[in-house]
Each structure stands twice: as structure tokens, then as C-alpha cells.
Image (cartoon, rainbow, N blue to C red; front, side, top):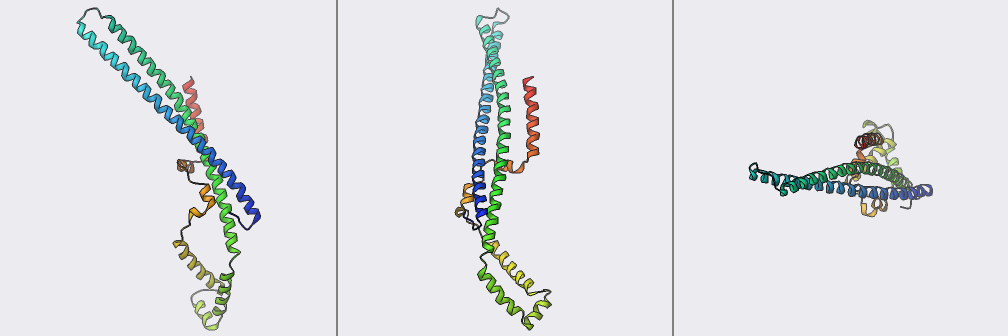
Length: 238
């Protein structure tokens, strides 16, 4: 980190701390959402198991009924019917709880996405300050390049050289120099790969799982989802 500009360095330190806190908040909300999602699946599976059990009792009762051929159903059949009703009632309870948990899960997902969006915004602010500071530091250390450009400018100002760059459509030696520098910079930048492992800020602010959706969403969409969730909650409570 350590930017030469003390004001930018202080700003970067503060923004990095805020982004780390935002990341921790996102991770906490993501864990909460995952736990709620797992509970939904668990209750849905329990409801399905209860329904399968109820159907089994029903089939057993029907088999007994068919075997009686009009005779008085035995006590066993009444017991099976009672167990069938109890199993269906249990399944209904699990379904109701699963619906409640789905609402809680979806609320947790919205909160997670809001936290993810806030983290990405904090990360972007930190990255911008880092990039601005690095660029400023680099531009203030151009001694070697400026010396070379000054020498090149002397050469370009020679009559024979001047005639050549004027024929190429340049208006000044500065235009020629900037075109040459731009060409070399573009070529080198295309070949350059940033070593992320040597960037403490990037290491501290990773791209966590699940952030793609948060990256694609905005406050308006999140507000709309909260409104839709509130309507579902009201319908469930009615």
C-alpha cells in the first residue's frame, strides 16, 4: 500500500478497513442464507417423507378393505386410517413450516445481496483510490522517460526529421513523441500481467462466491424484491 500522497494513503487505509468490514458482513449474511436454505430443504424432505408414509398407510387400509369382501373392517384398519390422517397432518405442518422458512430464506437472500452490493461498492472505491495513488506515484517518477523524450525532441526538431514527421501528418514534436510512447505502452500493457499475489489490497478484498448476482443487481431491484416478499408474507399470514 503506502502511497506517496499522504492524503490518498490515509484515504486508502480508511476505505480498505471499511471494505473489509463490508466483506465480513456479507460473509455473515451469506452463511445465514445458506443455513436457512438448508432448513427449507430439510423440512420439504420431511413433508415428502410424511406424505409417502400416509400413502403407505392408505394403501394398507385399502388392501385390508378389499380382503374383507364387505365384512366389518377390523380394528387394524381404523388404526391405519388414524395413522394416515396423522401422517398427512404432519406433512401439512412440515409444508407450512417450509413455507415460513422459504420466506425467511428469501429475506436472508435479499439481505445478503444488499450486503454483497455494499461490499462491491466499498471495494471499488478502495480500488479507485489505490489506482489513483499508484498512477500519481508513477507519473511523478518519469525522470528517465522525460530525459529520453527531451533528447528525442532535439532530434525531431532537426530540419530533415521535421520534414518527415510533418509529411506523416503530425503537427508538433510533442504529437510525435506521444504517439511513440502510446504505441509502446499499448504493446507492453497487452503483454503485462498484474501479479495479484503481490497486491495486499487485492488479497484483502477477494471476489467471494455468490457476488456475481450482487454485482448484477441494484438498489431498485432489491427494493422491488423486498416489496414482493412483503406481499408474500402478508398472503402467508392471512
